[in-house]
Image (cartoon, rainbow, N blue to C red; front, side):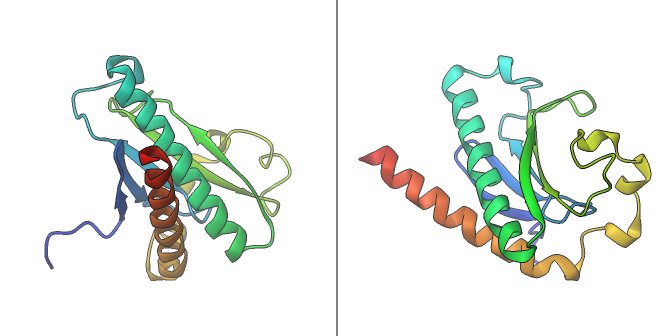
Length: 152
C-alpha cells in the first residue's frame, strides 16, 4: 500500500472528489474542500468559493454520465452543501433513480432510514469498481475540457 485513499477520484482545483463509503444510491460522491479551517462556504474567499461550486458541478456531471451509462433507470443528480453535521466545506452528490421507493424518489435523500449509512450490504466495495472508474474517467475528461475553456 502506498498510503493512497482508494475512495479519492481526483484532486480538482477547488477540492478532492471522493466516492462515498456508502452506496445505497450507487454513484454517491462527495467533494471535500481543500481549506481544513473553512467550516462554511461564506468563510472562503469568493474566488475559492466559486471554484469549489464549479468543481461540485463537474463532479455532479461526471456522476450523472457514469450513472446514466450504468443504469437505465437513472433519474438525476442532486447537490447538497449542508455542513450541519461535519464542520468542514463539502458537497454531497447524490444520484437519484426511478427504482427508489415512491415515497422517497422525489424527496431529499436525508429522509432515507439512517440505517442505510451503516448497512454493510451497500458499503463501498469491489462491486462498485466499474462505476468508480467510470465516474473518475468522466471527471478527468470534464475537468480537462473545463481547464481548456478557462485558459482560452
